[in-house]
Length: 204
Image (cartoon, rainbow, N blue to C red; front, side, top):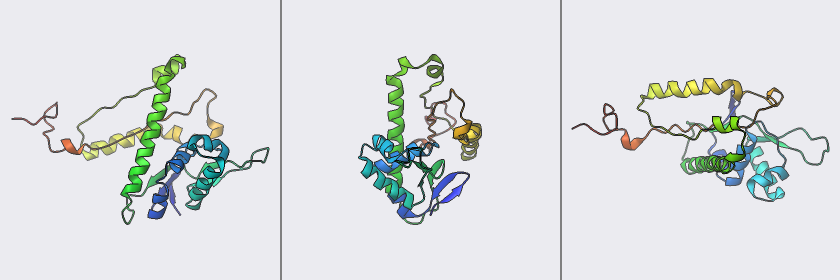
């Protein structure tokens, strides 16, 4: 079973990690780890599969402790599912090779994030001005040491922490679910160049 650290589900079993390498299962996790509870029928619209096929994938994720059945709704007809943590992460100490599964997980996350961004941009004109003004799609490169990068990443986590822990009964009336994607990738192709040059080119 996965370990839990501050509401993070950390997978260390290679079998559990490989079990994630399926677009439908990753779509389910993406939908449930924000504190949302959805039924198999509701999640079928996310996976693009039938409710019964989606239920199969939910049970597979439940086997590894990634999702669990929630409380029955008032009508009692369809029990919702929820994530067991707010995020699902792969342990850096996993024995054996899980690179293929990890690449699949990252690719699905990026595809889902791109789809959300595209959907927003296509409908931006109909968004209220206050939401259009705060939406941002940007990327920049910075020259940083490993220590500086670690501090920057932690600072971002600290800023978002109060909202990360927000539960259903704490959500303001005018709040929306917002995707904030953090992609921190050291650029190997520039690592050997002279950081003293502002444009990243080596001096002569």
